[in-house]
Amino acid sequence: MATRYWVLHLDLDAFMASVEILRHPELRGLPVIVGGDGDPTAPRTVVATASYEAREHGVHSGMPMRAALRACPEAIFLPADLPAYEAVSAQVMAVLRTFPATVEIWGLDEAFLGATTGDPEALAGSLQEAVTRATGLTCSIGIGDNKHQAKLAAQFRKPDGVSRLTTDTWRQTMNARPTDALWGIGQKTAKKLAEMGLHTVADLADADPGSLAARFGPTNGPWLRYLALGKGETTVTDTPGCHAATATRRPIRPTSPTRRWSAPR
Image (cartoon, rainbow, N blue to C red; front, side, top):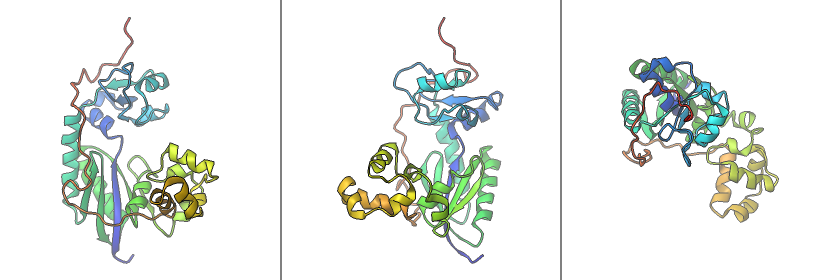
């Protein structure tokens, strides 16, 4: 394979729940849900992360904690411990910086890497091994021609997988998927697109730019079609603070990590 520039996206698997399981191995194999102060009956709190065992019950990030309790009443609910997650994240990012690649941090649990290599899968495998060896965590890695493709590819084989999505394979892989499969399109936008008769990525890619601009604005409308065509930013930068997520949540005092939540008698 010829040497060329690739964009990789590294996504730590079920990050916060995985950190808690590393700290408390007795939780391994159990449905673990992290969010708020650990009380799933508290109003206006949402799931920060759920283990894959909890996800099998339909629990997902951003889900109201009360809904998560209904979906998986046997789960262990834990409070978020942001300082602990920040410390582990810093370890991971330090590992990534030992590789011959530009590292752009996008949050506690994800980063883009720009690298020139003839074998991006081999690089991805080496990254996974190094992260697991240093922290005990697993990660999934997407490979693409740009950030959009790499970000989507990282979700194809989770946990602990490596996938590639490029301009050459875009239509075959993405065209039949719903529009909210694209990075940057949520359910509300997808609903508005459906009202225009645009249900799939292929529909959106073939849509009239003028109609999209009239519905979503002169900037956002064309941008949606840009995403459907598989385009995206190719530049990865290590400029501090350029895209790194900043923590704004107040650290929450943790309760006993092995306590299974139960309703008051």
